[in-house]
Image 1 (cartoon, rainbow over the protein chains, first blue to last red):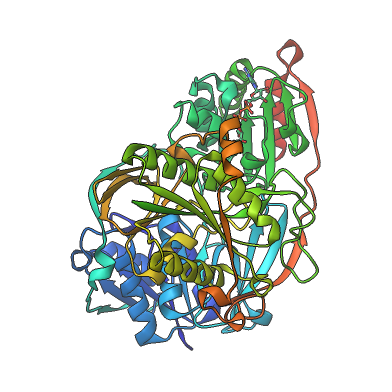
Image 2: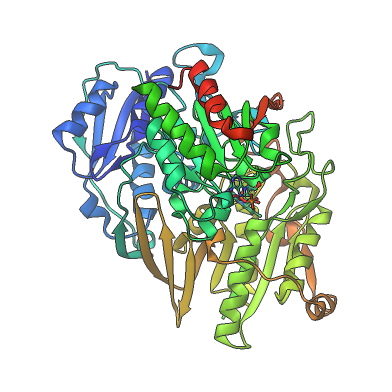
Length: 322
Length: 265
Ligand SMILES: Cc1cc2nc3c(=O)[nH]c(=O)nc-3n(C[C@H](O)[C@H](O)[C@H](O)COP(=O)(O)OP(=O)(O)OC[C@H]3O[C@@H](n4cnc5c(N)ncnc54)[C@H](O)[C@@H]3O)c2cc1C
């Protein structure tokens, strides 16, 4: 079976769940090879083997230099050239999509982004990948294939349930030579963000989000989220007002989430917000305006002031949990 | 300094967007407009022009059907100087790679005419929403790319951007020529003023065919794209569930009962 290259998504060397998902998907199409750009720790190598990586290509990050994205794409494109994989999977983040776009041009290959599912054609293991995407603010589902070159696919979080399968995980160091044209945009500063201590927004099973209706006070939203073990999200109105950081924004220009439960509080339900949450399994809304469009898509709604409903709900949840 | 802003004419997101039987977007079903995310790029180009002084020119480039010229018009009303519209029936149905080829060839033609120093794009279109065109242009034109700027600043021939990422905020710089894209965090775009609307009527919009930019019709379009949409299906619309009022403070308990019945607690 042909190799399927999976560009490992990791933060500071620790492998993210999206990588396990991509390795699981890769096994449907061929033999997964992880491409790890960074210092590979034993833990990281172990995690990649656990999810079936037969090979681990390691790229020394120092050889790539302090440049934006292009060198990563160049290395990956070189690997595509030497390995001729059946497909390349990257995580559908801003950076992942940019890597994918550049590799697509360099290797003259078709690219699909934002895949929420990837299956082999006809369900036959080893078949060419067929992707599923959710488009037009979640109102359509489309399936697509790559018809030219190596399929380059950017995969969204939660696109598969990670399944373990032991892989040999043979480590191969990749020789790196970066062209001068990939060194055009230099990073001059990196300011890491503090972790919230809550589940990762795009991976969380439950998301509680607050909008303009919070009036800038996210405490009731956070307290309810914590009682449910949920991630916290925000509407753009809340982000624009400076009440919550942009990395928590849900919607067209923020994150797209698809949790088991989405609780929208003080959010009207504009189309651009719906684009980020409409495919959630169950939607609950708390809004003081009974005419708010968010109620049109909510499985359950409470017309009321979030500043009284949320604290009371949190208290009730804590009571029932005992 | 010369700036080219790449803009897209898209179906209005608040309309009932759908696909045609050939799985391409039905662009006649819903009114179109300049993608709101590209307004931010036009705005940043105009702010750079204002800071640079009068000799900076902002050209707006679009690839799209006849009516896509409306996206150029709106940009000219906001204050851009001239427009280029690549219009050719053979382009219909092109995917991102094919579209980036057309844009890159058009940009090469602009480069050989007056030239450009900076190509600015929005962070993604509001219809396809892939957000990959700027990176593709950087590759095709062989100039550096600095994408997803939440702020952008030009200082001599150096461009600085700030990127608000998930795990870190990154600052980066590059020397012109450059392809950059900006997000909706760069600040609200201006509305066309009455003066701007009147002035736009006198601005020129050139229309180029594929032949004008040296692209063969067989290189683009639905059948020559690198990807194929195999099927499109409307999701069943969500239906409204039970809505209760919080009268007498009963809402919280009803809410928790619902969550319990769904086994979230
Ligand atoms: C190109 C573009 C991209 C966009 N991208 C996004 C995006 O990614 N994400 C996004 O969210 N938006 C996005 N928007 C903005 C979007 O159109 C809306 O403006 C935004 O979602 C509104 O946020 P909101 O619902 O919090 O505020 P509002 O629309 O002002 O709604 C506030 C709601 O809170 C309710 N409320 C007020 N007080 C209370 C209270 N005490 N208790 C309970 N309810 C209360 C009100 O009844 C109202 O329904 C985008 C817009 C554009 C043009």
